[in-house]
Length: 306
Image 1 (cartoon, rainbow, N blue to C red):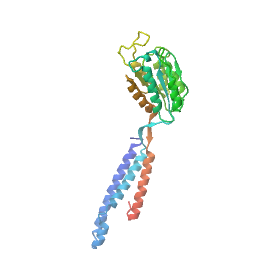
Image 2: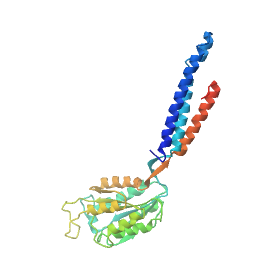
Image 3: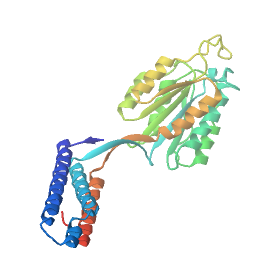
Image 4: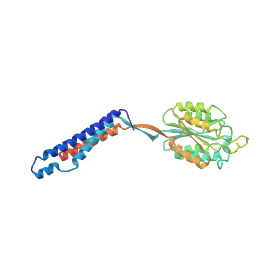
């Protein structure tokens, strides 16, 4: 918790302590005055050990502290779900996605995990899907209908061609609205070899407030070759980390289908949350007034006053 005017909170605590000191002094003075009476029954009635005086004094002190905290304008940082968020899932469909180091293939694992992602996104979130290889292809507009989003996932094409990560990011950004919580989730197994520079595109997207989360699928140094070529099927992890950093997101690498599903399931929730500062001044003010009113009512009922 942070305070815009911390001295007001300190002042509230100091005033509460002074009030408690005064209340204690006043109670001792009352008891001392009662000793002047010879009527024992009256003395017991005045100077009895009822806890109500201390309870009321504590309530008034608490009200003073709450009022001081309210004036200090406290805030806390919290991660909250955004109900009008939009997210685009970019799925690599380049030739290397036919590799079998992730069973049954990287492509099949990615398609299954994409369905898990769609199912895990909170209701009301608009979802888009972009498939990319040599070119980036949006598979429909943003939709908040799960069935429509799952239909887009079902139309992800089979593996073929190169890897145009920069074009995929640009196509995803074009689908997203101009404001609100917006995110891109990029799932890829390769090294960019076509189209626009992905880091430059990511920097532009990040500057617009769009978050980018990257997931690398596959195993480096496994000896796996891209089907139909003599090229090793590897992941440019440094580039994916840089892309995620530019988009103020995170990067993760997964080496099996289960881990990919778990990662996308987690991102389904994380991508539609954002960190906000919550102003607590009003709740503390309400608490101060409520406690003060209760203490005043209790004091009147018991014939005691602050």
